[in-house]
Length: 446
Image 1 (spheres, rainbow, N blue to C red):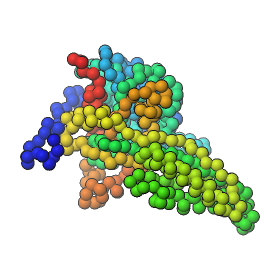
Image 2: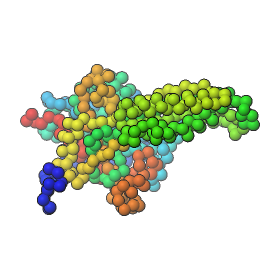
Image 3: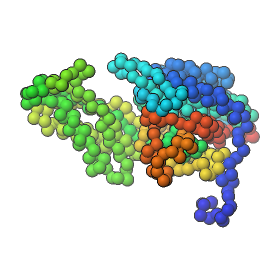
């Protein structure tokens, strides 16, 4: 029934929240303690040893069969409870090279070696610590109430999501051969809308993306005689300016294509201002909500890179490499409908909203659908929703008279000031995972 067909003052059963899940309150303290510990001790992609151990130890204590070290530091756990569907809850282990600026008493001060070996700050600036804590708490609740469901519960802590390499690494290391292959994979992701709410998309949840590296190799020399060089930096800089036209002039606005020059580096750390470098490396990210649109944008970026290099008086040599690619995060419609209905029953309709799709990206699609089929496991369906993380005080303090204005100024994922509301985010995220899992697992009667 649509809201327009209701009589004023009437409600449907989805408007009235279901009773609280029994025993969930008892998990709030250990769940928050796990979250705060993970937040204080973030680890970069591929180096998640401590995080993986904390997550695995928690699941082991709850009676799961736990496998460690899959595809790096990946964790997979399994709990069989009779005949029925196999449902996998997935969360991520890794953090980002970001210096936390939240002012929270539990803020991260961690550092770790970066790609060049020099220390970089590390922060859970994308909510992966909350994802892990919610998945751990949901697993504990379900393990302690096996009389309420039938089937196989699987829990995965995935490494290296931020580099879009962890899901593939786990699959190539035999993830679906080492555990019961799931029928459904469920996941959620924090975002800066009001904590206590969840959001479902009717189409793509997140965009597909490609990360390209364009390497320009020329003839360096003295800055006083640029005409005697084949300047790779000049060609790379020209690309940065031209790339904005790819999305603006070569794609239908309805396709929502984003092309971003994300980094440009010339020479080495010891270069001085009077030297024209011999190499320049440009990184470009491309995002779109369909594979054809992504293919067209990637081809356009390559064309621009080669054209800018060729236009130079002394053209540098160019190579373009795809460092990573991830598909569009598109939840299965039937899974989405079932989970959305379960969330409406649990939280009430006012706390379950729509999601327009985000141009952020994920490697979650590799675990389901065509991605899983490439590893010999066709037919695995995905369910994916967004989890509000902005606390009431932060929401109220954000300037703007409406939600759209507030969302433009609130610290978003990957910001050094991104800080989920601990209590509301964890309580809602845990309940969202529990109710979604129960909706997809078998029932004792079934």
